[in-house]
Image (tube, rainbow, N blue to C red; front, side):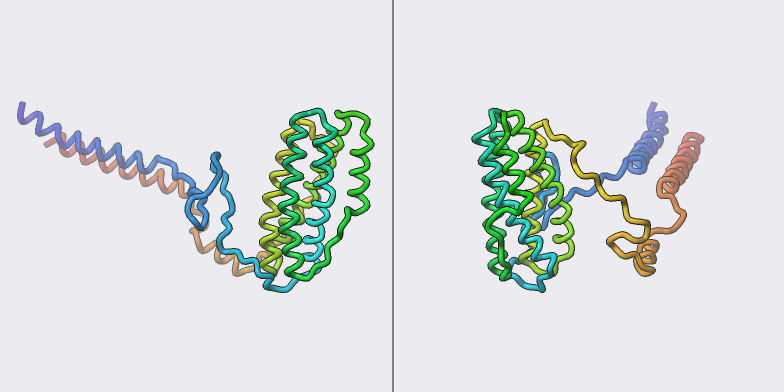
Length: 269
């Protein structure tokens, strides 16, 4: 009995090693968790939230015509969306639309103050009334003959407007050389995304009437230039033509074969 137990110990030991090796080789690698500069940050569903660290707001850096246009557009957005949100609280009979209007109006007051602070810092003159299109949209809402008609105009006009400024914010955020404009774009992006989501929560957005996206740029002519150095750096990070999955598979087979051979040797002894 003692001899039989002694002969089984190497087999159990080898089987344990075999199981652990296979588990390591077969287990998929998990993606890295997005973390902010102050540690892991994010909402309850794991969506990362941009941290405020590392950004300044001193008005340092050149201000381009595009930067000025962006600051003016943020001001114009508040000049008509605050009245529109207030109107929603007065004219709509839908509690959800009333809440959306209240939230958008209140948040635009905050964003407008940020915008005026940035404009003062950079010496940019801001308008004090909505432009012609925005005044027309407000007039449409005022003359709506029913709560249902008002709700549809309110939601569709604001959702379309936010969709237009959303990509404009991204361009400025990515390209501006001025830190105050960059900070404003960072914060405005969060406001606009929130407002689009709020409007869509009404359940009455007419997505078919929204502007279509422009056709994609031809290959090799995107916003990020691709040169020989970039291609060389990308190709040097991995061996061309080598499939990592295949390599791991071959390695697993080799390990298993080696362990089986060892087990047979122990069993023969």
